[in-house]
Image 1 (tube, rainbow, N blue to C red):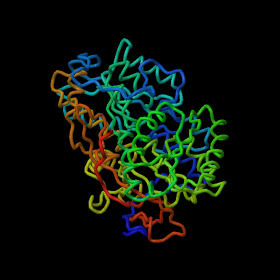
Image 2 (image 1 turned 90 degrees about the horizontal axis):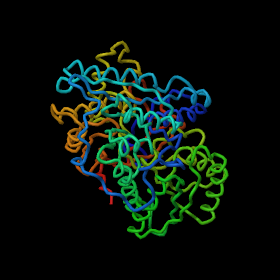
Image 3 (image 1 turned 135 degrees about the vertical axis):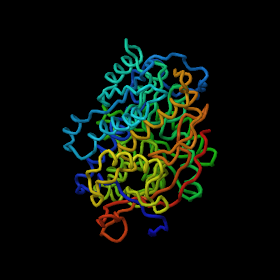
Image 4 (image 1 turned 45 degrees about the horizontal axis):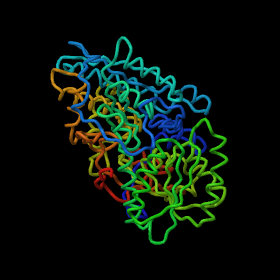
Length: 500
């Protein structure tokens, strides 16, 4: 179905569609916390950083898989001990006033199922995955660090940590990998320095944001959003990860394109809400006075929200170049039509995720599941067939927790199997470096290499579309209920550039 901009229409998140406009805001917070923990902005945001944490110094170099430890801690003749951290957001949900319908309960169910399927199939060279599902508070860095030390230095260490949803973030990633020399597969990402610091143990199922930012600049120039006399601004958080992204990656990318942006920095620590709320209106006021027409956000959700509020209050709506950086394109979907329709409707962004697809098993050529998600769906509903196909909840979400854990567990199993019968940290990371064209979930395929620690290989451009008043656009085809919002695919898959 053609959109006004000529792109292909895709579905919106069902978790948003089930809610009234007012409830969509807190639903967005819940969904984002579940997917990337951006509500908490813990990606490099602490002040007293543990040793080994990436800084804003010159880019670091990565260690090769051959330099990994030969330890087989967590591996026995019959088992492989693996931790699955699952974020505990009950208290946060209560304080925000939402509960239930954000699919948290599916996480443990999904982990147990997909581990069981591997174990029932003979395990990995005869070893069963000993799954340790651990609830944790993603708002507590001290709590996460304590768990990290327990897993990597305790009396009963684990072999690997799998973070399918992307809530094990920032410094805590480096605690496991750089300090603990323990493999970690995670959906949460930032820029290349992080995987260099954590190499060869840190492997991302999400994109390296250095590549995302480079592609964003290339797209902005080719589409006419950047250059050509446009005044461009960057709003960056003051976290270490944001400073890395700004100074070592985005600004050099813009400089190569002949663009010198206006840069505004804003407090991004979630514990400094008063400063963030006070600075956001001033930043927007300055950009409006300077005649800025395009803005690249390098900010987490807790900053993005007040910035959009200030834009709305001041009736200033520049073009936003959204992206996978802190999931700004994904989080924006939950903020329209309420409360920031004017600021977001029609904005475009770059993503490596399958945004714009449809959550059902129609042919892939018609926007249905990619092969990796389709396989996860088939296994899920073979185990849980009780929901009738006519019910919209019958299908799993492309960007949901079931396929996320399915992808992570299968990726781990593929690498552990390729490592051979002698499984240790060195053979495992060496095997990870050989994974190519793996059927993904959030992204269509994942490919790694000896110096490529992130999986996605392609990106697409999508536009946010508000379907008001309801029309034939943004309609979920199975139940014919008009969607409140949807993504429209404007440019289909293009190769993601290599960082640098």
